[in-house]
Image 1 (tube, rainbow, N blue to C red):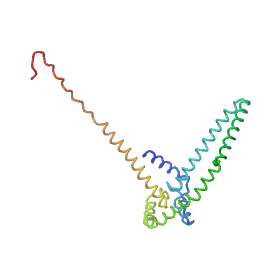
Image 2: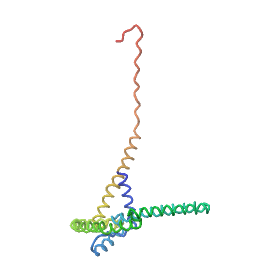
Image 3: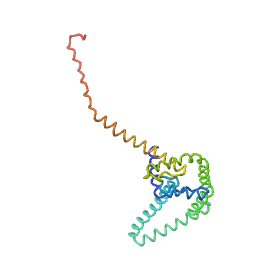
Image 4: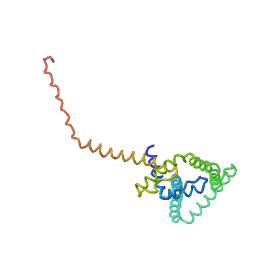
Length: 224
């Protein structure tokens, strides 16, 4: 579980360089532009993390299909034309049978299934995500009123870190979670490993005491 969380955290951090800091779902265009300008260089945003993960999945799919198709074409070019024709005819026959069975049982095609899933997401899930961001904006207003001046003071004290802490409460929570859980805990573990293990190895090992073996009792004598 820890390794899985670490992987997700690393993926999320990698998303920040391609993100403009916008958080989709807010109903106010003013909030969007404000968040985009203040979080443009944010080290981590929830929208950027989600976008990066989605792009990674689709990129992996498309790249896998391309490599498989490319390898197949290389092999296909070396197949004799007669065998190619036989394989093509057999493939077309099988696909016609599959299409017939699919249509008889009312199974939608891949393109129709993809369209239905996309429509379901846009109609059912996406509005809920938008509502989540809107509610978080409303609930976080008092908190951010207190936190925003602290962030400003931090950026004034450390100008090189200006803009890396996002302004939105969800993004800021994600950044703080990553920093505290991954950076602090893993650096502390590495520090303990170097210091404690190094100290333990540097200690002189104690020589084990040799126990005297009991002397055998000569025959005819009783053991005291």
